[in-house]
Image (tube, rainbow, N blue to C red):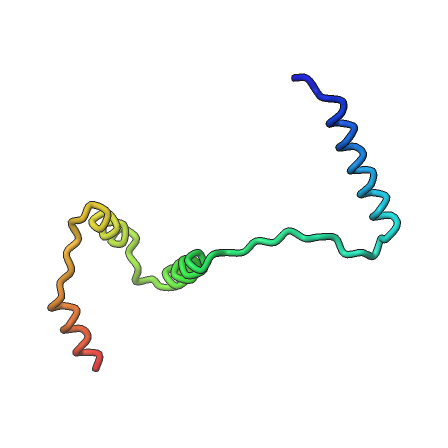
Length: 89
């Protein structure tokens, strides 16, 4: 690998300039890295936390349903949904 002296000199110059600025103003706040999660990531995180708190979640059952959905073979039993909704009233 060949190192280009001009690029190396430029990088060293930028580094020296940053060090001089930092020494000249030591109380200046340095820029901080920042990470932001998407709304979907926040929802996913919340769902995972809820699932981890619940002992009634069967990971095998969840993975089975996910596989059925991916394969297009998952069938929704509307009668069961209506029955449970009516019990909640």
